Length: 303
Image 1: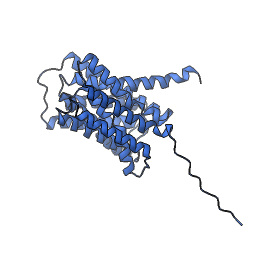
Image 2: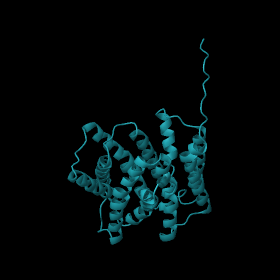
Image 3: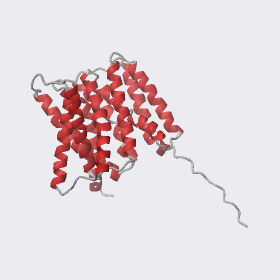
Image 4: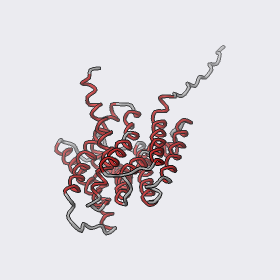
């Protein structure tokens, strides 16, 4: 295969590895001058409206009611609750790198929810879950999260919601192509802005230039471009490659947070980071490293 054929794949992987890994750092910059729910709502509503406008301009139409409502529900689970909780936690001074490490446990929770839906789980995957839970316990005892239990709880709720939404979304009918993402983002944006209004969030002053640039980055790169890159990978690569961002993003987020935001991780937190990433790698790639033995059934002799 020629190198040119690899360019879209390389570009999509780079997008997810770097851009999604950097969004935790950018969220941290944004919530310094934006109320958290308002910022997340503006991000997703704007991205969704822009994507819908593009789809309508290129001849697409809204899907039937059932897939539309399904996409709206997934948008609430993944984006409104999943990402909204992360944004709230970072507003509560949870370091962006630590937030990314906790979110990296999503594949572990996804595996647990898959079991509830009757999807078989192998022993090596349960081993990965056990190791990952040990990493979470260690992370919560190591400094940044131990002094901020509410921040830890919010991120865990967000991770559970994202994991459940991912599994449930694979069992229901959703709109095809980019329409699903557009509806999900619009719905999440509306829900988050309503939550912002109900909780009394107010802009006491105009957000800074850093705040506006952060939201712009999250709209264009973190939402529209990254989501389409993920969809490209799902269609053109194996699930292991497509979900490999789960153990690269925390590394990128930690490096950005410690390098540019002055975040400090304790030795225990560095160890927990390694344990959680190892657990996620084990869950996502274990079935390829240790394939299941084929089941041989003896043939009956026919007389």
